[in-house]
Image 1 (spheres, rainbow, N blue to C red):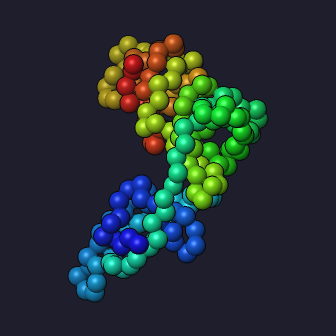
Image 2 (cartoon, rainbow, N blue to C red):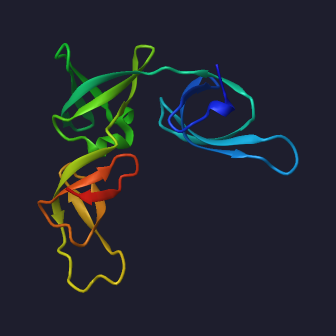
Length: 185
């Protein structure tokens, strides 16, 4: 059992019979009454994010997720195919299970598939991925009054905002948690 004092980002807990991951938390001590913990929780089955406030000292069941390395192969419409790196078995996952992670899946990349009690509940990508820019408008010289960004389409089909100096064919590093450009590789 864990308490609100153990909360940290990325911690998996069971709340109201459902598995959740803590996305954000804040300890709050109002002037009157006891301290509370404000949180944003992501449901690991549905992907929905809820805001919840807990009294200090509340106890929760700690969920242990099993992680297994898999390789992303390809996708066909709404189905994404992966391969187990030990048994070489292929298996499909739907878009709902992948959530926003599908925007950063590159063929032949290794990811971790998350299991809860033998059931696949999602995937975990590396913190950053390197992707090639396949389409973007050219930056105009003199357009640098401030930190100006332009849209760029990546090899996965995702559109992100990048600085003006990024051109087609460049490799850029993208943060998979925020979906933002980090640097040119």
